[in-house]
Each structure stands twice: as structure tokens, then as C-alpha cells.
Length: 507
Image (cartoon, rainbow, N blue to C red; front, side, top):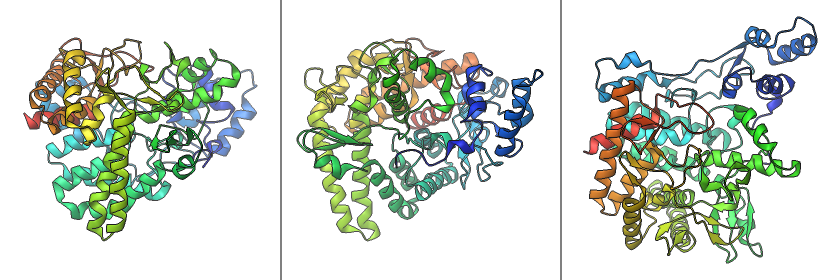
């Protein structure tokens, strides 16, 4: 596949002259508002009326858009919902507020992709299903005894795998060429804890489909002479195959068109396609954006596709380990043995290529330069989270976290402050969950408990001041939301609610 699943020209709000004009004129504060709009008439009629009317003296672009599209509103919990409530009561009430149904994709030309079951969305500008958010939300739903929602969300992810062969980043047409951190197997683990393996068994083949998606091209790169990459598969000089983030399109993101065009103006024309691809690949990572992906000091130096990310490969190790365990239980013992071998090989490769003996921490690896990244980030906890770390290296990671990453409000995402939202001073729910869970897995319970306590207290302090749950927080303090990145702070918020609930249940 050289591009995405959908023909963008079928959607007047994500492609074509009308789309470009709306975004270049900054008609709305957030580019995502227009791409999520639903046509009131057929897309062909929208195009026809725009082309016939745009040159008239009395033509007004905003009036045209509002006459031909239904513009969405943010999914948000009003602060007055929280009046006289504890944080726990507020979060409990939000499961219903943030649950959306997507059985109907809407009118022709809607960018929404239908899903068979209700799904908990993040909130704010994020009105749809998001892949890796769904896992962290599911952990909270499990602690809240909402197994019904978990099973439905698992079914939604499986339906996307059945339909498309991979899980798009979200259920929008403009997310059709990239996935996200492949945590479906962790969602299945949550379901297994709640309902037993019988609930998981029907989805094991879908999980194999996802693994095949990530490994597309692995045979080609393994046989190449020297380092090579194809889509998400990377072959290193010794024949080892690992993975990277990728996107099949090399063009501005429709949902952030203005930001991408403005960034591209700062680099030579010939370099722009790869810039767009690396930006999109960073979105697939979930870390959009971070110094982690940069060769220099700003986004013009982004090089996501040149890196073998430690967290992605740790998660794929977890997926392969799960398949090795589950396939024999559905009568596929030989296939299970193959995945056990793949998991063992990947674990060895992670510890060879992504362990920095000087920093004593797990890091990304540049397959292009054949060297480890010198940027320390919380992605380094992923091998602990999935069990890919050795005991001695897990202990070293714990020491580094306590020494360099721990702040009054929890763990800082990186040690660099760049103004990007996945850098200092931001702290994020998914990374706290991975760190706490990983540390506990290796017996570092005291540090795990300290991190969990600080994070939950931070969320509680912020809630008591604002009446809302935030997407991310400033961990230097004990109650501030982080205001960094390419969009305004968002509230709701699915994965924060999930992680706070799950961590609180363990206390």
C-alpha cells in the first residue's frame, strides 16, 4: 500500500480547493474543526456550488461553510458537573459523558468511520476513538467494573483490523495511513482479567493480523545488504529486524494543515515530503511532538522514521509474547512457537541496540547512523512495562527515574524543555501507567507507589482548582495543567480518568 485507505477527493473538508482555502484563511482556531464537519448536501454538490460561487462579489467563505456543513462542538465536561463532587465521583460520571456511538458514519462525505459498539473518547477536540488512548481508558474501566464498555471497545478495535488490516490512529478517514502504539494485546489482557480467556479467544487472529501489518516488509529488509527499511520494518546491518513508526502519506495532515504548511516553509521544497512523513510518523508514535524525534533544536529537524523507537519495539515484544501464549490455546501450537522465537529475538535485540550502558537507561536507536540516541525520555520505561528488560537493567532504570525524572507531580516526560508538549515540564497519564506498572513488575514497589501517589495527588489538586480532568499536567507543580504543543489544553479526559482510577484502585 503506497497511500491510505480512502480517496481524499471524496471529502470536500479534507482535500481540494475549498479545504485549502478554509485552512489558509484561518477560518477557525483549530484546523480539526473543519475536517470533522459533516456536509449538509452531497460532496459533489458542495464542490459544484463552491466552484460556481467563489468568484462572486458577494461570496462569503464562512457563510458558505456554515450553510453547507454541520460544524462540531468539543466533547467536554462542563466544570459545573463537578460542583460539590470528589474527583472520584466526577470521573465516574464522565464514563457516560465521554461514551460515544459510531454505528452510523453520518452523511455522505463525513470523515467519520463507523464502529459497531459504544466507545469512550478522550474529550475536547478529540471526538472520536483513538487507538492507544483506548487501552489506558480500559484499565480505568476495569477498575470501575465497566467490563461491558471494555468488551465493546475491544470489539471496535477488532472490527477495524478485520476491515482494514490494521488499526488506524482514530476512526476518521484522514487517519487512514497511520496507526498508533499497538496496544490491542494489552486491551485483550484487560478483558482476560475481567472475563477469562474465552472472551479473548475470538480476537487472537485479529491480533495476528495486526502483527503482520507492523512486520510488512520484514523479509525484504532482513535480506538486504546493510541497513534498510520498508514501511515499518527496519533491517539492521547484522540482519536483525526491528520496527519504526511510519506513515504511508507524505503530505500535510488535514487536521493540522496550517501548522504543517507553516513548518514546511522553513525547509527546502525537495525536503518537504519527508518532513511531512516524519511529522505524521511522530503522530503514529503518540508523542507529537518531542525533542525525542529531533536531530536539532526544532521541528524542522524531525527524523522520526530514522529511529528504532524503544517503546514501539518493547510493545511489539509484548504482542509477540501474548501470541506465543494464546495461539496454542486456540489450537495453533506451531504458530505459537514461532511467536515465542520472535519475542526472544526481539528481547535480545532491544537489550543490544536500545540499552545505553553509559546512561544506564533504555533509549531509541538510529538505524541510519547506527548509534543510540543521546536523549533520555520516559519511553525508556517501556521494556519494564512489557517485560523485555533484564532485572539489573530494570534496577538501573529505577535509579535513573528517581534521580532525574521524578518531580513534585510525578515523572517528567523528557529532560529537555523545548515548548513541545511531549517534553519537560509535561507529565502524561499513559507514561505514568507504564512506569508504575513496569516498576512493580520488577519489584520496585516503593518507587512505583511514590510516583503513583504524586501523580494522583497532582490530578486531584488540579481538579479541585478547575473542576476538570486534563490531558496532561505540569509536573513541576502540584496542580497545573501543561499548556504546550500545537493545540490548546484539552479536558475530559479519557486516559487521565483511566489511569487515575486504575492507580487509585491499587492504593
